[in-house]
Image (cartoon, rainbow over all chains, first blue to last red; front, side, top):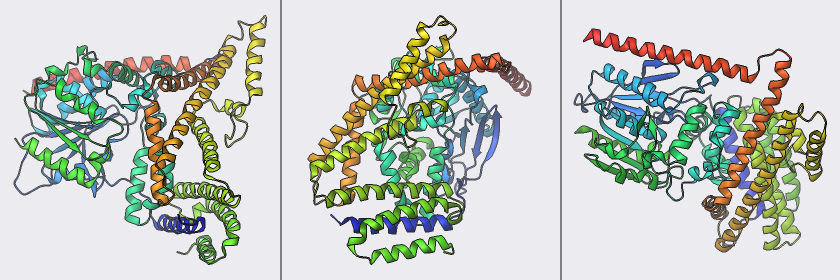
Length: 349
Length: 283
C-alpha cells in the first residue's frame, strides 16, 4: 500500500481540483426540455412535452402519460439535455405528458390514494386525452407511480391503450426487499399523528439507510471524483439537488400505502382497495411492458417480475431487464437507449 | 484563480509535497487548520457553492483525522488486531452519531440527552436515572393526575432511550459481522480503493442481511415508534400550555385543516360536475 504521506498528497490533489471547479462554477439548476403546463388541479400540474421529431410525422397513435411517484420529484426524467429520458422520447416522436404532483403541505395531510388515483390522476388522463384529441393513451408509471398506473388501469381500462411499468414494486413479500422489512414494524399511524405529513427529509433518510455506507460515508468520500470538471460537477450537483428536493408525503397516503400496499402486500394479494374497488391484477387485460433494473436495491427485480404471474390476463405481456439500478434505469445513457428503443417498438403498434 | 486564500492553500500544498517524512504529523495538523479556515472562507472561495465547499472541507477534515490516527497506530507498532479494535470503536461511534442525527426530537431535549455537542456520548446512566427518578416522584405525588402529560412524556423519553440502545446494539453486531467478512476477504497487497470498496460492500451486505431477521425489524420499528410517541407526548404538553395562554393549539389547527379538507373536496366535486356538464354540452 502507498504510504500515508502519498495518500495524503493524492487526497490534497483531488481536493484542490474540486475546490477550483466549485470556485469557477455558476449556480447550477436543472435544465429541463421545453414544455407547457396544460392543466392544474390544486398543487398538481400536467406538463406537455411536444415531439421534436419532424421526419415522418406522427409515429405513435396515442399520447404517452408518465405517472411518477409521490416521493422525489419527476424532473429526474428531464434533469439536463444529456440525461433526459423525456428529451430522448420527444426526439423519437413521442408526445409526452408528465404529472407533477407538487409539494404537499399541512393542509394536504388528508389526501389519500383515492384522491391521487381516483381524482388527480383521472383529471390528468382526461386533460391529456382532450389536449391530444385522443380516445386512449399509453400510461407509463415509475416506481410508486407504476403502482398507481396499475390501479388506474383496473379502474378505467377503457382509457388506457397500453401500460408500461418502470422499476415498479408489485410483490412486497419477496426476499431482500429491505425497504419493506424496515417499515414492517413501524406504526405509521402514530408517526403520521405525530408529524402530520411524513417529511421529505425522513424519506431521504429511509432511502439512504438502505445502503448506509455506500450512500453515506462512501459517497461523501468520493464526491471529489465528481467535481473534476465543470461538466461533471454540473451533472453531480443537479443530481444532488434532486436528491435533496424531496416533497413531503401526505399523512393519509403514507398510511394507506405503507399499510395497504407494503405491509399487507395488497396489490399482489388483491386486498388493496382504491375508490371502493379491489385491485385484482388478474383482471388486467391490456398489453403490458414491465421494465426493471437487475441492480435495483430499492425495488428488487423479483418484486417487479411478480407482475408476470399476477397479470395473467394481459393480452401481451413483455419484460425488459436493464443492467442498472433504480434511478440508473432511466438516467444512465446505456439504459435510456435500450429503454427508448423498446418503448418505440412497444408503442408503435 | 484570483482568490488569495486559495492561492495560499495551493502554495502550502506544493510546499508540503517536498517536505521530509518526519514532519508528516505536523502537516496533518496544518491540513486540519486549513480545512477549518476553508469553511470560514467558503463564501469568498466559491460564492455559488458555499454549502458544498463547507461539506468538502468537513469531510476532508474527518479523513485527515482518520489518517492521523492510523499514522499514530503505525508509529506505536500496533498490529492488525489492534487496528481492527480501533475500527470497531470508531464504527460504534459512527452508528451512534448516525442514529442521533436522524432523531427528530424536539430540540429542547437534545441538551438533556446529549452530553457533548458532537454526540460523542449519549445520555449517561446518571441522566437516565434522573429521568426515572423524576417519573417516580411525579407518580407518587398527590398531584399525579395534574402531571399526566408530563409523566407520559418522561416515560416515552425513557422508552426511546431503551429503543436507541437496542438499535445501537444491533448495528454494532452488523459492524462485527462486517469486520469478520472484511478480514476474510482483505488482502494486504490490495490497492486502497479495492479495500475501501470491499469494506463498503461487506458492511452494506451485513446490514441488509440483518434486516432479513425479525429482531432487527422489531428494533427499527421500536425506535421509530418510540420517537413518534415522544413527539406526540411533547405536542400534547405544548397544547396544554398554549391553550392556557389563549393561543390556538395544534389540535385546534387540526380541526381547521379538517374543515378546509372538507371544503376542498366539495369544491373538487363541483369542479368535476361542471366539467362533465361542459363536456356533455360540447358534444
